[in-house]
Length: 268
Ligand code: NAP
Image (cartoon, rainbow, N blue to C red; front, side, top):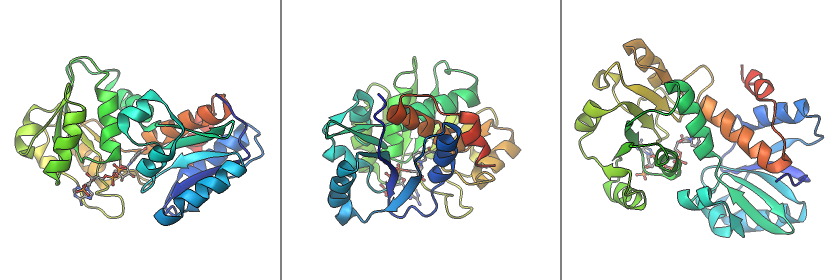
């Protein structure tokens, strides 16, 4: 790919807390690309008209909550992996057509393998949440060999619908305690802990040999990850995933590898 976009944006609502402009602008500076990555606060009702304007300016960018599914529905062309997830986080225009991808899948895959030291054999994953990020995690884990995912969510019906879409790898578990007993990896794909110190699961319920991956990120780390590490669990928060999904998006837009170290340094 590599489409020389005329403008680079993040579509979200609200977007004020997003770290993406910080590391994407660091990547642009390092690559000497004269663009500024802007965060656009877009109300859901305004999304269609904003996409029309972005098409005119040959823009590219990222999509975050709450637009990932709506932009997916507006795409002219989606990658296979984004279609599998049913949500997109990356877009660009080619010959006036809206192209979309989901780099959360690759971002999660790379970050979790860095935590685990490679692809886990026979992973037993407990996945908390049943939204777009949970679907991206499932799309990554279904490519691992002999993995199983126990989905635990507050909306059991929604979790069942998601598990049906990933029936070869996932099932719904209503007892968190049972699910955790067998787990080799626990993944938080809910926003719990994003704006406060709430924790998605009491770490006392997690075996110290179980790895913990929190999609939530906060500068300085999430409370849940700190508590898990204290218990002895290998643990990482969502920052490495965020950086990697952003790096993969950058590659889609410009056709070159970004300077990942410059991106990482910008968040210190
Ligand atoms: P989403 O589509 O809104 O889904 C959120 C899920 O969490 C839903 O299943 C929701 O349940 C559940 N949930 C919300 N509040 C909860 C609570 N208090 N207790 C239990 N469950 C709760 O959001 P998403 O796009 O999947 O994103 C989820 C989180 O992942 C966000 O914090 C997002 O920032 C993070 N994320 C991080 C990265 C990264 O690169 N690190 C990438 C993507 C997403 P209901 O359906 O019942 O509302």
